[in-house]
Length: 404
Image (cartoon, rainbow, N blue to C red; front, side):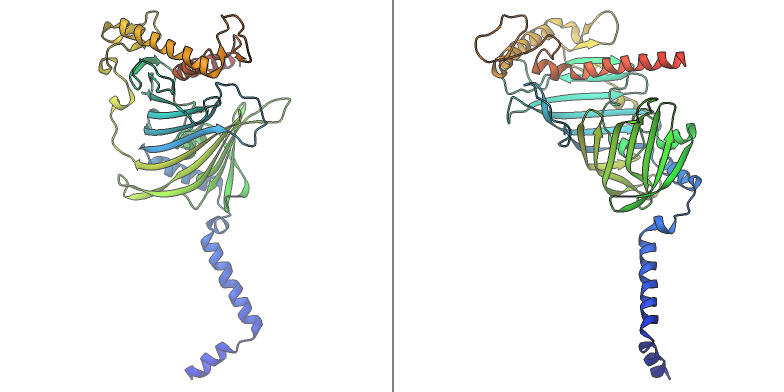
């Protein structure tokens, strides 16, 4: 009897066997691609998943590499001798997501257009304790000799503006800190109403498209249901009355990895290979090499105490008077003079003439008064200038909100 049943199964009509095979294949793909199986998920369901991810992660710590370069698809433009054609950074970071605190230690190498294969090495410490920011700049190690000891702390700037917000950080790619609002996606959805705009494929995965409109900005995220509903892609737009929306940032996550979340007894996905494109045509590639979820953090990790610095470091805390650690202004002045000599040598190598001097004889590149005054000083002061720019933007935003 069992043999006859077995034979009848083998000798089913071909159309029935084909139909059975098609059903099995369809079931496999539905199981392998949850977005199709969950295609009827509501906005409330997706927001619940986003809130659950935020609730599971309080702090982050780890290391990553960051490479910044001009987008190869950007319109071509002439490069100055001081133009940075490539910047590679090794970063160690700690982030307190719940309290908005960040600490980054960066070792960066800048390859300048006119220096060929010789990079300028710089070290930067950026910390924000939720109220004040600390940026410690060290003497760079340049391909031009200097008596100033490279790697020694040189200047500490203390301001109320977060110096890390101008960078692309690991938490940005996980939507644990949005560019602009500087809050988590879950917090942003508590303030603004989002809407679902269908399902679109990103990197081979069908993702839910979430759109959130603010007064003058638009945030779009393609949420990957196979990776804790983290965004496979994010785009930020500036809404303009008379022109199409202008894209400010685009963040793509290429690879994800699960990390143990011992504090919750679970594992969580996190993007480990990502890329960002800014409105000024610069690309930033992020590769996470180590990540810890919910490590313990201390207040001291997000501050820099001038008392811990060696003598001769200039402290600028925004007050009218500059101070120097150990009261040794003479050390700072000596190093500043050594850096000035190094700058002059580098100008000569790059063929750049100080605009205060007369025109040279022979083909040299002339620096206009509004250009960066030197390659080396640009490296030392880049963070300071960016912090000042953030202050201007904050002032403009406060004034615009006051008129609204």
